Length: 335
Image 1: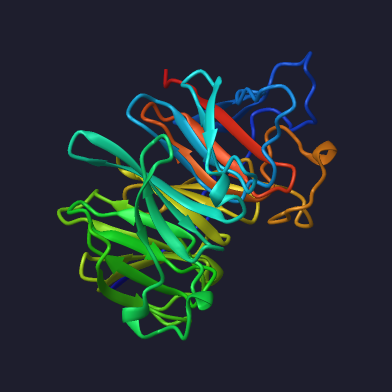
Image 2: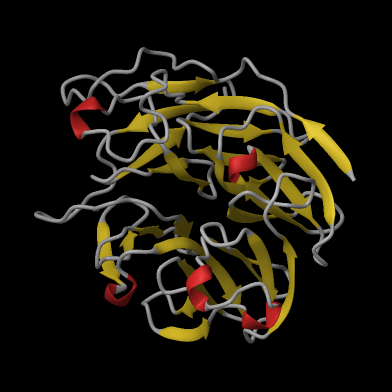
């Protein structure tokens, strides 16, 4: 087992212009620096008249056509936007309140959407239009739970062989593996602060940078990432400069981490920090759900619950906010 400590990095700590409240007459700010420079895109998500996001406490995913899928706690549990930000559709009334972890995977020629639901104590596989194809209930076979009520899954990730990994972030801090049919395979982790244990395995992601695929677990309240092989054996830990990591995504040589306490972090190929983006300067606003809209500042995040790159490296961030906030940052091409 290796332990990688992540030092504080200088790159990307400051926006190139000072953050400010939204002013429709002023250009939106450019944030970050170097290879991680982005233009803050005001109002990119185009909601229909009279429609609000509601509490944003979920995830973001993309299909092969570039459409963007986001979760809300409203009866529009899954909202779909086009590659241009235009609202296309919404579904998931039965999943209102608790649609939390989400990913899109390919099965044969078909794309499917996986959804982890904290309140329903289950993971479901759906078509991209919301038709439920499979339900995976609480892992009774693991013998770690007295009832389904102790199980509140926050994350789901699909392995290269169709493995279904589920993080019980709001339950008892185990990670469970099921096969593609939903049959129980194994459980690992469990509550604690020792290597291989978790204090809220909030987010999951696949790391395909090495010779073998690894499962990355956002061990949120231990302020670290942990990586495991496909048999659930601990490979290493990444910590040192993470603030309550919520989600992780690998793209190329880098990992993207949503740090709930007010910023987004980028780790390089050696798992060292290469950028902190849009850091919230007011500690009293970090990881707070109730910050009113009039206190939101362009160029600053408040409580990043999910961060995702699209295939071109544009950045999408969901803040955990009761009034709902989703932001797109367009990547600035390197010169």
